[in-house]
Length: 87
Image (cartoon, rainbow, N blue to C red; front, side):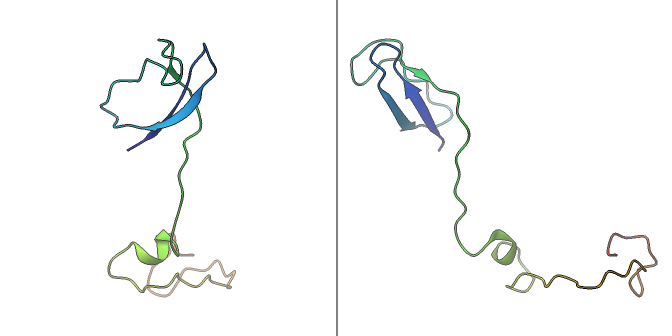
């Protein structure tokens, strides 16, 4: 569920509210009761947790991140024929 930030223009009260996307926007200020309580436009906040999505969220691969290639050779890899983006 998204977190929406609201502010009251009458008293200046500001608070974040956890709401479903289908919920109606709040209109009454919980602090003073004024009807001007409105959503603020703010940057989306999210938090990444854990050891990394690339290492743990794909099935079928190894559980560690792939090693970076130290080769700067621009020739195609054996067997690919040069038609892919592996080089």
